[in-house]
Image: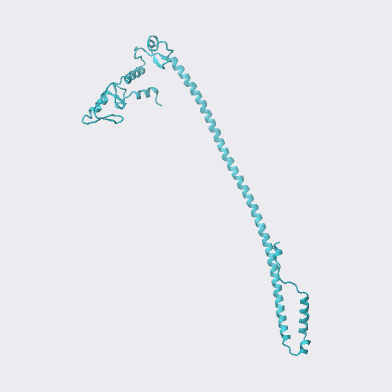
Length: 271
């Protein structure tokens, strides 16, 4: 990280030569340069009709007047003095720190100069004081850092615990639904077996009835044949004495008395 001194030096440096301003001059656009630097640059562009700011490239129809920026020149001198550790006004070592104006001063500044009556402290004392402040801030930041690190550690544990809990809940849900599916599968198979058994019973009952009716049809076919033969007899005596005719008449009489419905009933099978 750049120091305060380095940043100040950048602020007081010419963007052409990159050195501290030497007779700083200002252009109308607000940018400052060393007088000799900008004149040298424009001198190399003498053939040009327009003059340009080296920093923002603003053009001027005629060469601007290069007047010294006294304010910046004074700041540069004070900066140079502070770098040398010598007071610019009294050429004495700056061994004190003015707490009111927050700047280094010499003994004469404190006794008879601009800082007369201001609270001052030796540079060593101010250094110790500032280091104590910095040390206190460092301790505070380290504690805050430790607190943040503990929070991150705790949250990471919570994150892992929440992940584990999520997986545990998902596993329980899967097991629960798997159990329900097994129960449903078993109930389905049981229901299908019940239907299959009832179907077997119903079909067996119907098949038996079919066989009974087929046998009856065969018997009736035979009886019809016998009746046809009896009907073919022309002689009344022979007809009445015929044993087949007598047997068939008795059979017909018995069947009429014992006649019952032959319609198959299967509805009860499914009840």
